[in-house]
Image (cartoon, rainbow, N blue to C red; front, top):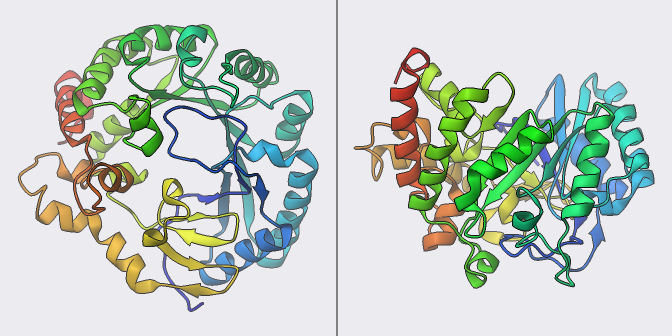
Length: 360
């Protein structure tokens, strides 16, 4: 693999293919459990650091359910990380994105020992959460998730909460927000249920109008509690308005050039598109990289700003939005995000509500 340049905030690595839940809106659909070989993990890190020098590398274990691999597995991976830190003179930090059902005292001690941040998915109080986030048997997962969340909180581990807004809970965004405050959540994220195959089958995908309405109602609550909780994407969007342009998450950059790594050591342009060969960029395991495809996808935001988004006053804050949403809604990664109308409404509202923070 020749030297290349990637715009990377964090390296997302799929250490486990497969999940113990069957959330009814999830874009991820692997049922068999496959774990990344430690040798592949070592090769991924070494290949990355050889080609893209970084003083600090943040690795996020995401996709499938990473905790299915067990604590001993990650102790082995973290031992590899320490060896690579010494070899390359870098610092590697780690985070986990988990459904929370497997968190116990052993995991909590592991996270504390290694200074890991944790993001837990929970969709509000029990009667809302259990409508979509279920085990294969159909049983709701709320009690297991809440137990894990409270263990993390009691241990003082930095924990973020991610809520997926869908047809079953979008009308109760105020209740979800109040629930998060009661549980002491200080970083709360809201993502819309995208038009994935499973979300469409269960009728859970949101429309742009529903997403916009929910976030506009959320701004009223958040305005009274900004000293207690960061709420994304609202906090991120305010930062974009203050800065005058977007940076960071792919849904705000059109595709900034990052990548996710599959359990086989392959590179994909998006963690939600792992396994879709249309977005395959290369392989650390086999040492090849498709620069042409990478550059094509990286140009997406600029192309949309110059064409379909040219007349939009907020184009520089989202660059056409999420590539995955565009691809799933109309089969074209170079289309606009299906939630673009919502983004415009939210940016317009935030600019008028927080003029002191806006330069746009």
